Length: 163
Image 1: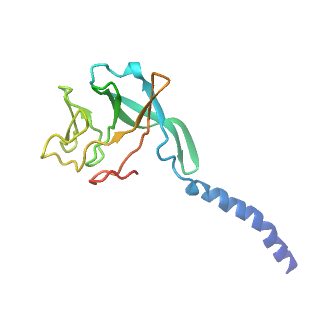
Image 2: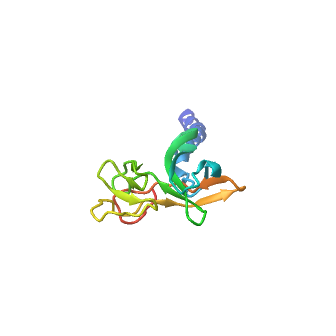
Image 3: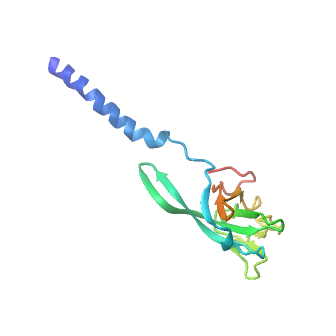
């Protein structure tokens, strides 16, 4: 009987450590609006036309960590005031990737024909997208580094709800 009690007591510490390690990734919160370096200012066209850039960042998925993994993409463009604007490439309607139209005057979603102007605003009343393209905060650091607060948002909703 005492061997059973000693065995049970001796196993408490390893079992508790194992449960703690197992649940640790689930307790961690995502770094919500951490900014990620995307490109240099010189890579963004000066004429205001948008250019697509892949967003890479470290990603923690349950128990694995992936360094510099593509997590999405953004369109960057210079505004008339000289600032840089960022739009998530994911269509707010159903989550497809929005592309730049051949005339480079608007964005279009190939899945359901949502249409947006270069500011990301829905420009066709028949567009199925419930909201404009998702704009993202941009910070220009050290004179030429473009950092974006990259996020994805739930598609199919009128409000911009972070994933």
